[in-house]
Length: 115
Length: 115
Image (tube, rainbow over all chains, first blue to last red; front, side, top):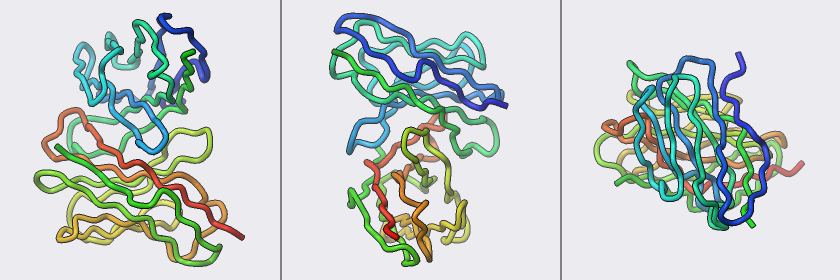
């Protein structure tokens, strides 16, 4: 049971480039989320999904796209990278249903630098 | 809207002394409250949560937290700190009505336990 996995671990992009951050979980969790972590600001929610085919925006969605074609995978796409997107990105998952307040399981993160 | 404040950027404590990390929150309705810990270059790990019931909740690694509704606080405590407790600690809140297990995180508090 690998839990939540993220690839790549590190990435350097030039301004304007696009890329996809991968996230997968093998726990059959319905809920998945993407957060970015910046110093002093904690984690901020980018996008989330309550199940395959269903996604919604979080607190800071601009510049990012997501899709959820399967329960296991939840990729995050940067359409045109900007230096403001330099951050550490975490994917998380949690089971749905009852109870609805389950803790989230986090991946190891992707450290992204945009030059 | 929901929010979390962690008023201390860093807490320094000697090994063996009590450790307290402060957290206050703002949310409509009864909150779901969580503490997570992040070790260097790792993802977040769940420590404990308050949903309902006893105001004192116990979690992993000897940590506990006290929910105080009148003060809207959820401080994390450990009676005797270890050097290995040095890490970044995050408080998070979820409103009961929030879809997709959406969490709002505080900015984090770095704990340094000195031998």
